[in-house]
Structure formats: structure tokens, C-alpha cells
Amino acid sequence: MTCDGVFTGRWVRWFAESVSTTEPELTDLDRRVGDGDFGTNLLVGLTTTIRVLDGSPGAPGSPETPPAAGPLEMMAGVFLDEVGGTSGPLFGLVFQELAAAARAAGPVLTGAAVEQGIDAGLAAVRRVGEAEPGDKTMVDALLPAVTAVRRAGPLPADRALALAAGGARRGVSETARLRARRGRAGYLGDRVTGVPDPGAVGVALLFASAAGPVTA
Ligand code: ADP
Ligand code: MG
Ligand code: MG
Image (tube, rainbow, N blue to C red; front, side, top):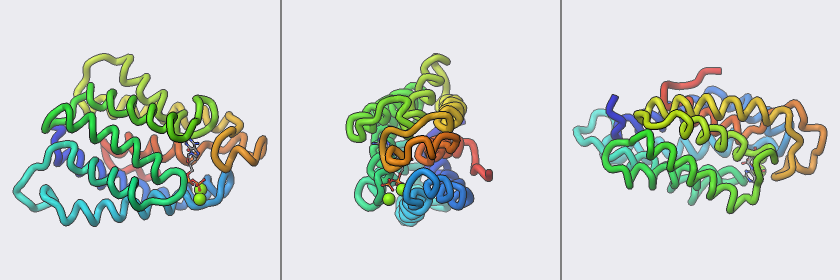
């Protein structure tokens, strides 16, 4: 598979579809551990992103193939500039680092760029959000995602993203066992034990959507 801008454009669209389908679950999770706006924050950001993508070179039906970084840069820009909540800018940073790694790799996304992008995204989220692993945040999905990719060695980008999805999903299950120390869930103490972190679920959806829309 050639992981060019058509691939990343499809990935972003599938991610939007996944979030649209799972928005009620994401909202319910954030109702239980936060203020209930996570699903809306993510969905509004992705709906706006798709509108931007539709009006840009490489949109379905257009003859140009954009570089792999193009759609990721658009998504990053929307989330950094327009999306609210804590997760808007933090997801924006992850998308921005994925886009920067893709841009550095050239027109086609590589497995090494996927690893580099997730790693830099994780570092950015940790720097800005000041969350440590085990605080029950999206960090707990990003860290096992990059670890899974790193352990596997050289891979094509689509395979690397599948491994990242598996790592992130395992991280999500772990977050259900954790007591929150950051974000709004941090104020709720033991009441959130047993509920997975919504931001971590969002990260798992991001990587899984590279292979198609996630329905449940
Ligand atoms: P808000 O609390 O502002 O309503 P959202 O609902 O948009 O934020 O996003 C909540 C998610 O953001 C959490 O599930 C968690 O994954 C992530 N998050 C919150 N605070 C932090 C932080 N300090 N560092 C990293 N991630 C965080
Ligand atoms: Mg919230
Ligand atoms: Mg909020």
C-alpha cells in the first residue's frame, strides 16, 4: 500500500466517521469522569476538518495527490486553532507532530515517521499537560502505542498504525483500572475507577481508523 496523501486523507475521514459513530459512548464516558463535552469537542473538530479537506487539493475526485502530511496538517490546524476543551489543543499537538514527521519523511508516510510522530506527540502532550504515565489520560494510550511500534522494528506505515492501535487499545483497558490524577477526573477520585479515560479512547480510535471506520 502506498501511504501517500490519499491514504492519510482516507484515514482522517475514517477517523471522523469513527468518532461520529462512537460520539454517544465518548460523551457518556466524559459524563462519568469529566464534564461530558469530549465527544462533542472531537466531533466538532473533525467535522470542521472534513469541510477543510473537501475544499483542498486531493479531495476525492480531484486529480492531485497531496503529500501524506497535507491532511494531517489540516486536522492539526483546526484542532489547535478552533477546538475547545483540554483535549482540543492536546489532540492538535499530536496531529501536529504526526504531520511534522510525515512532512520530514517526504510524500509518502513511513513506519519510522509514524513512530517518530507518536513519540513527539506524546512528548508534547506531556510537556503541555504535565501528565505522567498512570495519571489516566491520553498519555496512557500514546505511550503503549509508540512502544508497540518501536518494538516491531522497521515496518510500512499502515502496519505501524495497526500496531499503534493495538498498543493504544491495551492502554485504554489499563486506564479503566487507574485512579485519575489529571484533568477533571482528578477531582472525582475513586469514583472514576472502572471507567476508561475518554481521551485515551479517542487516541485508540485515531490509530484504528487508519484501517477503516470503527463501528463500536
Ligand atoms: P475538559 O476537561 O476540558 O472538558 P475534554 O473533555 O475535551 O477536556 O478532554 C478530556 C480528556 O483530555 C481526558 O479524557 C484526558 O485524556 C485528556 N486530558 C485532560 N487533562 C489532561 C492533561 N493534563 N494531560 C493530558 N491529557 C489530559
Ligand atoms: Mg470534558
Ligand atoms: Mg470541558
